[in-house]
Length: 129
Image 1 (spheres, one colour):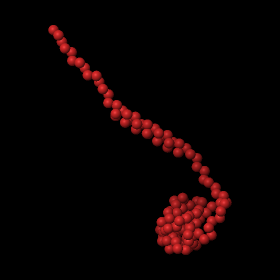
Image 2 (cartoon, helix red, strand yellow):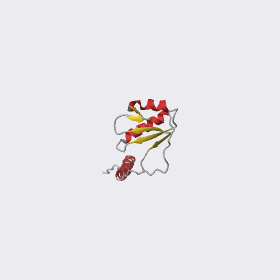
Image 3 (cartoon, helix red, strand yellow):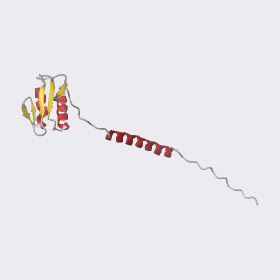
Image 4 (cartoon, one colour):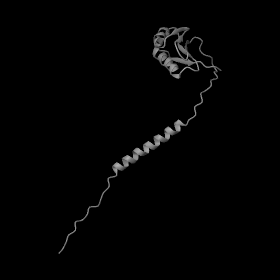
């Protein structure tokens, strides 16, 4: 009796899925390492020693910690800032932001954004020596 044993096929492993997973893991490790480094950066707020004085002809916008802003010496509500800046655009070429040190950065950034939208090409932030 002659039994013919069937030949087994050699198993094959599809590596494309394994390579995809390994690539995703490498990306995750690289990004996690970068975020860890950024989180450990010490931030020291800068002190300014102004070498040049501010433009005396600039439009002065005072930013208190809370409440209304002061544009050219007049109180302006934060929601009316854009209209006030557009109205004064023809008289001034630049904006000087005088922000209280306890005012939020967001308030000063909003003034910068509104000044840019109103058409001012230059803006400065006043500091103490």
